[in-house]
Amino acid sequence: MIPNQKGTSIHKVTRSATDRYLSAMTIIAPAGRGLTFGDPATVDGGLSALARGLKGSEILRIAADVRALLAEGRPVCNLTVGDFDPKQFPVPHGLRTGIQRALDAGETNYPPSDGLPSLRTAVVEYIAREHGVRYPLDGVMITSGGRPAIYAAFRCILSPGDTVLYSVPSWNNDYYAMMVGAREAPVPARREAGFMPTVDDLAPYLGSATLLSLCSPNNPTGTLLSPEVLRGIMEAVVDENARRQAVGGRPLYVLYDLMYGALVYDGAAHAHPLAVAPEAAPWVVTLDGISKAFAATGLRVGWATGAPAVISRMRDLLGHVGAWAPRPEQVATAALLRDVEGITAYRAEMHRGLEARLDALYAGFMRLRSEGYPVDCVRPQGAMYLSLQLDLVGRSVGGVPIENNEGLRKLMLERAGLAVVPFQAFGLKADTGWSRLSAGAVSVRDIEECFPKVREVLDTVSGEQ
Ligand code: PLP
Image 1 (cartoon, rainbow, N blue to C red):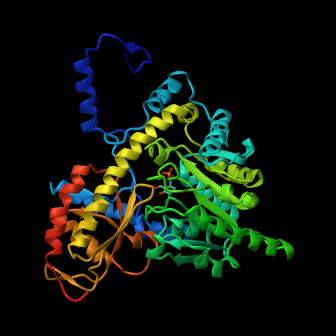
Image 2 (image 1 turned 30 degrees about the vertical axis):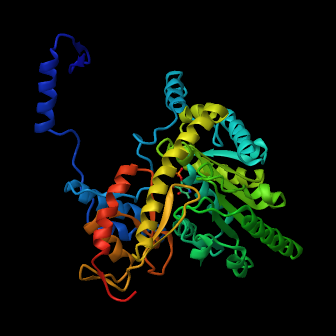
Image 3 (image 1 turned 90 degrees about the vertical axis):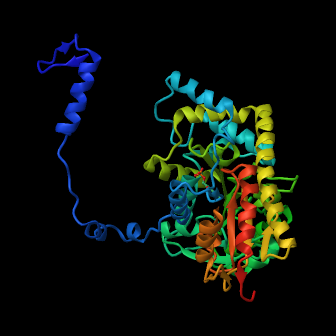
């Protein structure tokens, strides 16, 4: 039915006539007045210092290079994206149907700004089962994935000029620090420690920091903070806060990112910071969500936990941003988190899939190492990542001098179709040839097929190591 000019309706118009009319209108007279916005650089110059200081994502820049090669029909083993191919790693069936049911049931209004009580309760139980730590309900808030939880924690804990301490390589601490005007104290973590920080690495900087940002299992390294190392770090935080309390100083907070907490392999020991140091409860904010645990990066459900006094400030902040998770997703996630058997079965399958891919990467690169190629990698313990070193900076490959990690990345992409993300995208400055490989969007076959090409390229290396 199409309204005519008098506001009544024309009933007897055939569909084909209607279609012809609409497409003719589109070609001859596009609706609305076209706009011009002036010189983009001039417009940009009028924006805030924060807006103009923002850096685009390195990972997305690299992803664009990969897409360009794929568009040319070139084969690429794409190990760049921290996401899942839904054909290989679908979301839990019950989550999908639960969202559809919630939509059909009219769950389409604003949720409470800290999340649906049913989901917050399910999160309390989930954390208690997974980590042996029980939060009060008002110590839990729901967010639109993990990112708003991180942003709110940085925003609510750090005033401009305060210092955030974190190890590198690590994910996006530099971006969040920039957004809140914090001073950064990035501490390089060592290969021998699986690129995770130790208490000795952090101790010299604890006294001047307001926030210590930790993540385990870690993006980009695929390694863990062992419960012993974590306990050492948390005890140092508690001691530091006892000192500050004595002189009336502001405390040192900890942001602990558990986004990959469900992806721990081979029975590796892994702990919640308040399971090893419950006395640190006033100062620890954790975050988690369904993005990685349930391959649901696009559904946008995350949560933050902490002292109710901190969480209520974060809730107020994000309420103004509107960064709550969509209501149907909240309803379905509450049911998902209560389904203990379903989670166990889903997780077993997901672990099998990710471990098979990470094992194939690790075994393939270690074989090259055993054959004398300048390759190293760290055995993955969790998440979906593997740390790989191609020790080629300063040497030539096929006659091309490799000056830095970016040159190495481009060359491996061009010549071997191997797409990786250098540790520079995770805040590490040194051009040591280390990169992140992500296993969520490739098959074991894709991985196995890349090794002959990598070997061919490595056969053309010349120059002293
Ligand atoms: N924390 C880490 C370590 C991540 O790697 C990511 C995403 O890649 C996030 C948090 C954010 O997760 P989300 O996609 O739910 O915002």
